Length: 198
Image (cartoon, rainbow, N blue to C red; front, side):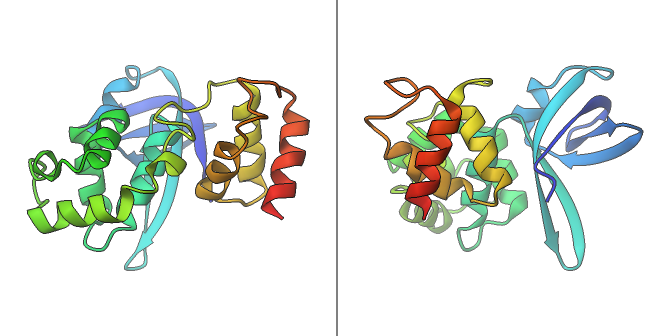
């Protein structure tokens, strides 16, 4: 799986971006919010990615942050919400705002997104409301700071094959051993996380 790309922005349009990584151009479909956060053509960027297959066609999706990718995965797990609708929702609302909308059961705001009706909006809220704290941002809506011990733990566990939801649940349960608290050694945090993950 292609988890992220670091390269030069070669082309941008309304639906995505082409990132040149060592001479290979990767086309990533992205939300409007993610596209706006990228630099201009020629800029060096890092994009979180997710490779999906539908009808024997591979599509690479890009995200400005790991929390947006986690939300995309959560949205596409809801019946009736495909990748196209998930990107439309993430184009309309930034991850933190979308999280608040779902947590407050505001189905009216979700229906402002083209193609999302009342029943689909209610289904999104019903299926995701209780899991967003674990899936998005690990604690509330803030992703681990880049370069922090917690971010190193996330990357290491992902490389070992653990899902973002598994990692999030483990980190969110470490209330007495969090990076912000007493524990700041990545290797020790990884050891404790692996113990909890079994």
